[in-house]
Image 1 (spheres, one colour):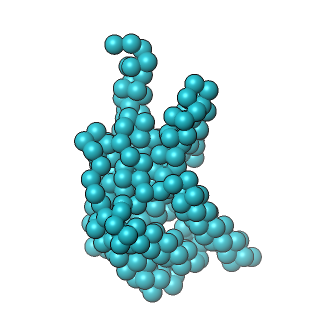
Image 2 (cartoon, helix red, strand yellow; image 1 turned 135 degrees about the horizontal axis):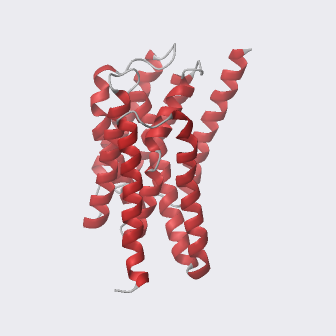
Amino acid sequence: MSVPALFPSAAVAVLLAAVAADLLACARGRAPTRHDLPVIGSGIAAALLLALGTSFAAPALAGEFLAAWGSAWVLTVDLVVLLVVLTHRAPGAERLVAVAVGASVLTRALLVTTGVPGVAWLSALFGLVVLAGSWWLFRHGERGLPEAGPAALIAIPVAVVLGAFAVAAGGAGVLVLCANLLALLGAVRLVRLTARVCVRVPDVAVAFSAVLVFVGFEALLTGLAGGGPAQDVSVTVLCLSMTVLVVLLSAITAVRAGR
């Protein structure tokens, strides 16, 4: 077997090891918070550098990888928002988040290697659940995020469903698996960082409700249309823009409240 043929398998092995090591460190409480941003940034930087390096030899392949990573990262951001809401003040929240992200890793790896199933009905059902959750959050979050309570139990199934969506959006193949693993590197730390920031934002429940409404409608409409949550570049950019807009508005609100 030649070196080029070995490279994809080696890349998957290295990324799996990196994601697993990060999950174990976070689950055991051995991941210092000062490393959160560097680890999150390293996953993003590695994806962009890999796409840049690939573009010199195979521009089409680089574009395919970047599109798969973009859609996977958008769904990882959705997962982060849902996990912050579902595990707020839940006992053993950090370990539960690590298990949920690990379930998403296993789901993506399994579905990429065995084929992508049809998820139209699952997408519609998930959209309805998320919309119901956004309404609940809006009604009970006057003073910040409400305590998750029994809702924390669905964190793992939510991670599995979003893992299936990520694979359906990106397709199959080693390239897609690498893109998904890079998108999940530092996901637990992103949940932890987001949860810390949320304490300082007075209207965080409203902001998260807006994000969940967008996520819910997207999943519901794609499911009713008879397809899975496939995303092209325009949809990826739209989803990221929506999330960034909500974050900026929340930050402005937090600054004004601090004054």
